[in-house]
Image (cartoon, rainbow, N blue to C red; front, side):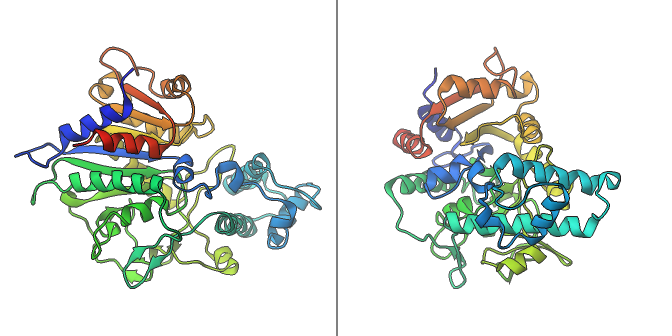
Length: 383
């Protein structure tokens, strides 16, 4: 089996523009699951932790949720909400939004929306109490970390810094390595990391396309409305983000903290886990075509900390667009970095890409271990 870090490094060297007269554009897309922020900082929760609530956690602020559960015959007093119960509640809300005929007699669009907004506000509040939130320094227009970076964090940052430097290309043409990022996470970990790869007088976010164009970001008007393809990276959040808000005037990005009352009135655009995901909101309808096009145009896909669960059926279908057919997968590579053993990783990927490993099919290279260890090994193999 091929050495994952060494093979990745060789692809970077092969497609790098630096030191060459020309190098065709090559998109390296990172697909980041919940294991990615966890690999960056142990304080970040995994999925089940974020969607589990003890009675004492949700009850003080979940008045609308309490009434909804009571109406649906749950024994509310002392009720702990497990991840499975959370998904069931969201599923019921989703079905009642879609099909008026199945609503209880005292439920309508407005009070269903109030309950859903309260759930989203509870998620935001829980996350803030569990994990670091990286604020944007308004004077520098850059993200700030709350602690000094560890050696592992420095290694991850150095890898992305190297890729972004290789992405400089020629002065007028989009050439060489171009890293892009797709994530299922709500948090701003990847933004903070990449923003700190930028120079002291620059911001990564100024050259990043998010799939939608906000009217404001952190209270400021956007300097760039329409990007030039030559110098742009993509950062696409397919499950939404804590900073994405929809207003009557359009979308805005706001990384500052909001109080619970404000969150209930206008929660961020985030997809809640359910037994049947509902991606009908405008944000997700806008994001998906961008993700699919990026996957089509990518040569290298790096999956980090994502277990490819069967319940994420739509996300798996989207990932399949990277190499839908054997001919699409020829000369394309998937690097899978996860704590699961290699055989498990291969089995997961094979369920999406049935032609992986076949002659002239998609190449899949697993790596069992922490992302920081993989990043360090890649750096060791780069000139």
